[in-house]
Length: 388
Image (cartoon, rainbow, N blue to C red; front, side, top):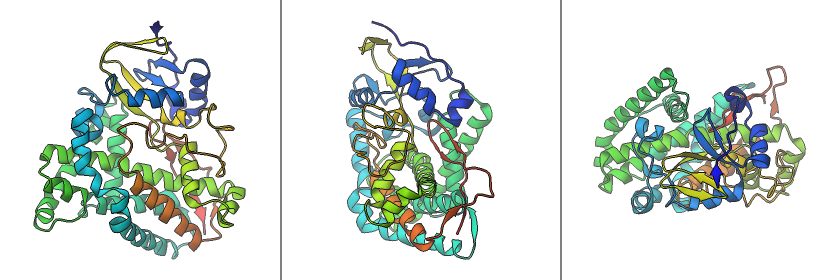
């Protein structure tokens, strides 16, 4: 039994491309303490699955965690009955049945509108002109904050995810996060009278109608925006990039050899939009001969699990025909992403297929700088210059 070995990372390099360092950790120190992040990183797929399910030790309840401090305690930062009770209220709004009966039609309308705007142009940055718009507009109707613009939704999301990943303590990042949180509270207050007078299928309406305390409603709306904007935005942009840079894989889809959902799953395996989930060690615990102490911070690295060579041959390659079933893109335990069905519908069923159907000659704009990805806790293309 010994403490987790110390492994240092260059934070700039880790943000630009975490995969080489994560691969080294998997091979040499799969459970290690990274001083620059102040956390123990768990990098192997099986270890992550085991630890995530052991909620008695690997707790999501983090009173001093950045998410709780900056955004309020939401259902993803609760364990046991407290988590289940909030999820029971939240889940019907985003369940597969709700997505099929309520949201899919609205998602299609949002995507169609965005594509019609693109049809008046000949090129541009698809992150800005398509992925961001589609993700933001979908999140507006899903949360019930239809009084916001997609620009605001995207800005709030980015400010919050920057804030909850601000382990370096940058005061400017923290300030922007506080401003976003205050703006969301104001948007909720503005919408409350309408959803109380005319209840609908939105998260805000369903949670308020259930009698959930308002501070909890607010925290869960912020949770939804923080992950529900950047993950679809980054996955839409990333899927488009992956197919355009791998024409042989795109041909398999166009010939009907593989389905669009398989492309979605493989892209999110290759580049997990949400790369990690934090936990707090609730009591002294030994795992795989590593001593973990109460209140240690642990990061479960989904992005590393999805490239674990024990499960994925040529794990750094994009291959839409591979078996992706072992992936942990949406988690593996009781905190499995509640919005997974909505995400899969919006991205894999609607947004990306419709874009390629409408613009069969879609290409990367080679006259622009190369596509750059960024992030380790959350990751996606920063821009996607294209022609159509």
